[in-house]
Amino acid sequence: MEVIFIKDLKNQGKKGQIKNVKDGYAENFLINKGYAVKKTKENLLKLQHELAKKEKEDEHNKKEAENLKEKLSKVTLEFKVKTGEGDKVFGSISVKQIKDELKKQGYDIEKSKIELQNTIQSLGFHDVKINLYPEIMATIKVHVIK
Image (cartoon, rainbow, N blue to C red; front, side, top):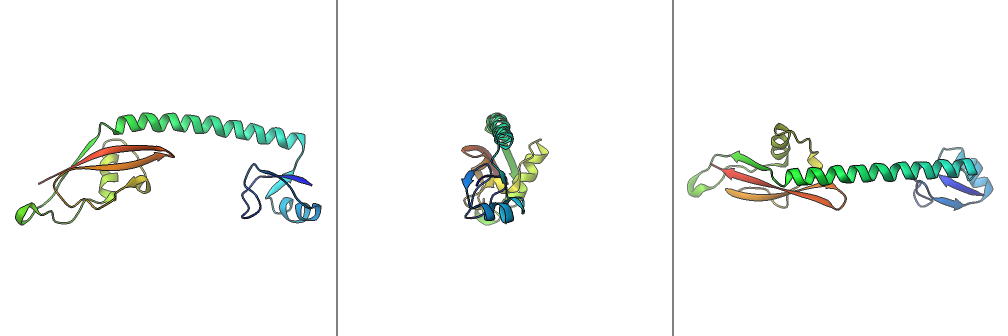
């Protein structure tokens, strides 16, 4: 029996995949537990409609990410820190501080999307990458002053 997976099932199939499985397994497990539906014309049309809708949504999200990338490339965040002897910075600039400063400027970016290779512990300009969408990275400048 051919089924269309409506949920991901580890080592069996991913959402939207069409697979030929044994009748008993399909009826008693996959369909019964809500992982798949029988392959019919109606269900195929529904799947195609969902895939087209997802593709449009992805395209829209990608355009939004590109626009945001352009805006963020012009952003410079400034942090005033206390320094000790020889301009040694006390503490460091964290991802949370960067997120909070971006929020003050009107950009709501999740903490997990901000990528810091090393903690910022020195004065001057530093580049910080933000993962906006798969394959779309924005870079902002962080200026640390005393």
